[in-house]
Image 1 (cartoon, helix red, strand yellow):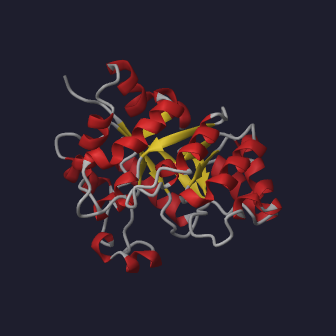
Image 2: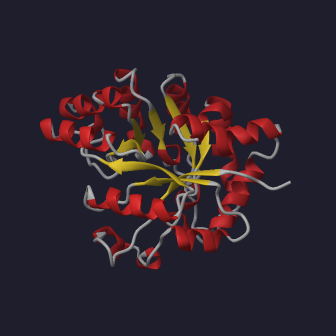
Length: 280
């Protein structure tokens, strides 16, 4: 029986269309990456639906470009757009504009590289995030594991906002660190307004030497806390190419969830994304 899945975390870029200065730091993946290249790499197992997540390009140029990609590739079903959350009235105007775009389902403001571990709790940031309910937009959280205490408080202070944690909070897989990440994840999972992506773990592991077993303690804890109904698969392509080909990570994720019932596996690989990003 064929395997049908949604990829809830995919990036596309083309430096010939718009600039991505950060790609200079990762030349191995700096080339053109569009749905065409993804489908080619995924070969016989491409996703049935794709959620695009912002890549740091200028807005609204990036959303405009991805909408054009979606016109040619119907599997591209939703967009998580970049939005600066702590810009006051400008944030409100940006969110209003994004809410009018049919494919935009959520926004992201990267906090992973902020030096202040409590950056996301600054009043102006909180004020921006708290507006998302009115615009029917979710918020993707991209942070590192040491920032999780503040993230827990962010989610707690915005109970009406829907959150999705990217890459399981980027745990210290390379160093084999499980704590205090496990406690923080348990605290997050106790809050009803957040889902978690089964994504990005391979780039937190040893790029050249990781094996599926290295990821099992982390995935096992996600299953024990969030459960299948609040986990959603993401390829994190092409960033994941720094550590893994597309199909290798897909196979690892399937292996790590193979002990679940077929129904539970379908929830992780298809149905949670449908709910979280409101896609058909």
